[in-house]
Image 1 (cartoon, rainbow, N blue to C red):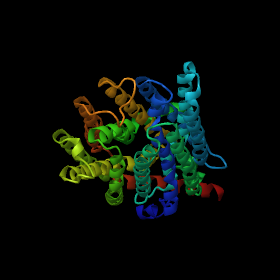
Image 2 (spheres, helix red, strand yellow; image 1 turned 90 degrees about the vertical axis):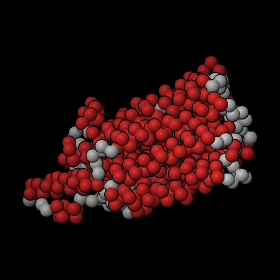
Image 3 (cartoon, rainbow, N blue to C red; image 1 turned 60 degrees about the vertical axis):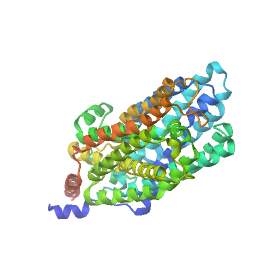
Image 4 (cartoon, rainbow, N blue to C red; image 1 turned 90 degrees about the horizontal axis):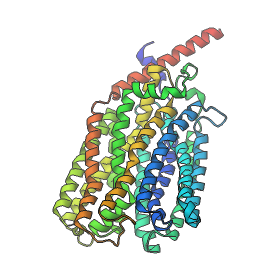
Amino acid sequence: MAKEAVNNQQYNKAKLWEIGFFALNNTATNLYLFIMAFVSYYAAGIAGISVVIVSTILMSMRIFDGVTDPIVGFMVDKTEGRFGKFRPYMVIGNIILAVSVLVLFNVTHLIPESFRLLFFILIYAVHIIGYTCQTSVTKAAQTVLTNDPKQRPLFAIFDGIYNTLLFTGGQVFVASYLIKKHGDFNMELFTELNVIAIILAGVFTVLAAIGLSSKDKKEYFGLAEETVETKFRDFWPILKNNKPLLKLITAVTVDKLAFSLLRHAVVVVMLFGILIGDYALSGTISMITIVPTLLITFWAVVKARKTGMKKAFLFSTWIALATFIALIGLFVFIDGSAISMSNFGFATILFIVLYTAAMGFGQVPSTLVNPMIADVSDYETSQSGRYVPGMIGTMFSFIDKLITSLAPAIVGFAVALIGFKDAFPTVTDVLTPEMKVVTIILAFGIPALALTVSGLIMSRYELDAEKMEEIQTSIAEKKSKHKTVEQKIVN
């Protein structure tokens, strides 16, 4: 069959609104990720669990989160029912998330002290199971949504817009509204924040399920009847033999660790509330950076559609690295208090420009990763015949979470080293030389190192634009041959 003929039939395209709706699935889970970033303040400040123990628990739970991923991914790949392969996990996962958050934040501190820690761990574990169910679909269902290399990056536009609005708007809401309204991280603050997040996440999940409904069908599952039967023990051979998967996992995981630190609620407090001396500025700066960040995301997607996602990933990584290095130099040579909207001088302008570029270009790899995982899944299908998007996506999540689980532990032990053993730093703490050094390292130093590693690895990534066209052609040819054989048997 001529390549041109194959190309006319190889692409399963989605409507633009379907991509936009489905991207809300990631936004729904990111809402929970955002509110759970403040769980340290609840656990230590209200439930009375020590800082080091809280940090250790959060690290352990993140590892547990990774362990549940392969199990759920395997279940997703084996599921095929009336409501499809993916949608049941989206809905069930979101229900578990909502119930677990309500119980965790409203009951834990009421439990007798001798059982409180165990209760906190158990409910958090249930929360993680729900989170895994829903997040596994974001990666796995990319394969059925669309396989058009020009269309897949469009997911990143919607995802980038939603997440920019979520994390920016969320930080403004907490820093400029909730803290002012309630005075500190107390029960009233957590109640208001969590109720709003639960309602929004529920609505987003319903819309995402609607967006996926026409694609969550057997005819879009890999090679359909030709797909090779896969068992749980095949996780290791797939991981070992799929080199693009290994490289993508490693590169994006170190990136995510870096940005998990930078976005960690305690690090944000240390950077804006103590080093700069104006916690509300974190919300203001976030608002200022919304438009530039979205423009950067649009640019990255346009570049990805023209030259492939690998080149967009690499270009963004190197620019982000340069800006983080510049931010380190800025805070080494200036007094953080010079950055102020009421004293709008050179230091403030330079910080806004660098911080915007760092956050904007730095988030591009994470924004592109979901459609890139779909590429890796298609590569696996073309090589081995296996259609295992659930296993591929959750393998990524497993290793990702093992590494990023270090973020709360790194923050907890770092602040403990400078004297904060019983409580995390808050906006009322005074800046010391030790605090300044630790803040710069957590916010900018580790991200710069991570981006360096990520860029070097992705420079050797195999799945560029030309390779993906070859892969889709190969899959289309196999499907076409299979249909021809079926028609001959019928006739």
